Length: 490
Image 1: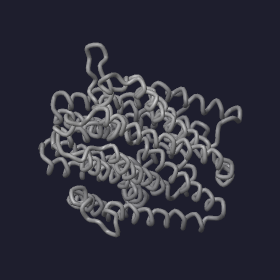
Image 2 (image 1 turned 60 degrees about the vertical axis):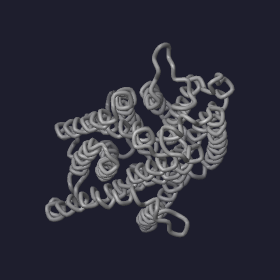
Image 3 (image 1 turned 120 degrees about the vertical axis):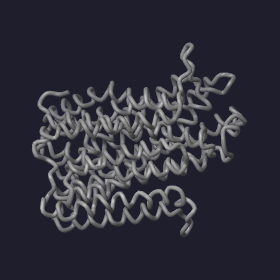
């Protein structure tokens, strides 16, 4: 890791690495498990996946708020990690009931873990520290070391030797993350204690107990939420909209009562949150339509080795690890010579690269064999472009939130940032359904015409690519006025 960074960054790096091993191990198996083991059709499986991942990223809205006001960041992270591990082990019951109950626990745990460990990373650096962006890129590499281990080891073991082995390994990884964070707390420079210990003693049991009591409510939402339709939209949509109103109201109130500078910064934060939804709605096809595309229409044979479909997700974290340190050094070097692109420009360029990645699949389809399978090389190039786009946007976004948010609302603002991911997951599931099979079970996959399947995937992925490039170019053109509204934040 780079010289000059606080030692606490290493602690957060390790804890986040294990937590991501847990999350991506689960994510890599989930769609395949729903379709191949529980015999669901694509449409229902993608809907459940979308509901789960949306709630995973919506939960930090409350996890960040309660860490800001009651628990402090350290205790929130510890509690969240333990609950996530319990969730993984609940899944080992091997039925829909235990799967959905475990998913509900993981949602609660992630809400406390995800936003708050990113907040601690931000608070380890002094305001204006040029190493902050570099530190977040290093931290982001920790995320992807965990994701790489999940996609190379956890998910393939689950897919080839039994799904329960994969889910169990994910739970063990989460326990390792909790222990690593617990024994490394002394290196966090005192960051993350409860804001008021007396208030913590009075209300912490209520927070912990209420969080556990919410698990059955989330179970009901995952299993029944898609069936409750209000004004043409399912229940999850309205829950996300309610959280959006709550978050926007609090952020805007803080901005408009803190002067013009803070107001403009909050407005830019909310605008970039919207573009963040666009990026991740397209990017997160990886866990649904791109995984099933790899299963059905990608030639995964490498010599005598047949790569499991879940393992194709390894490209992204592997490329992050290869290029993450290069980007970390690049941002610092460009900053020193005054050539570092502003944050909105980085976002726009990231979205353009994402779109070009999808368009590479159109090129790859021209090289499909007689079995209508695209060479694995083109899927790898797509993930390469998605990864470079991600490095322009995601670690920079985490750092941006800690810079633009009011200091007393950093956890809440980080929760708002992750709420934009929640909308992304919801939209991603809707997009994935355009590629899906409506029939249920393995037979539907076997009977699917490969040529029709490939044509349908190329139609959807091609449109996604063109739209993404167009939106990215639009943001590039808006980058100068948005940067001006950030009042010196870079």
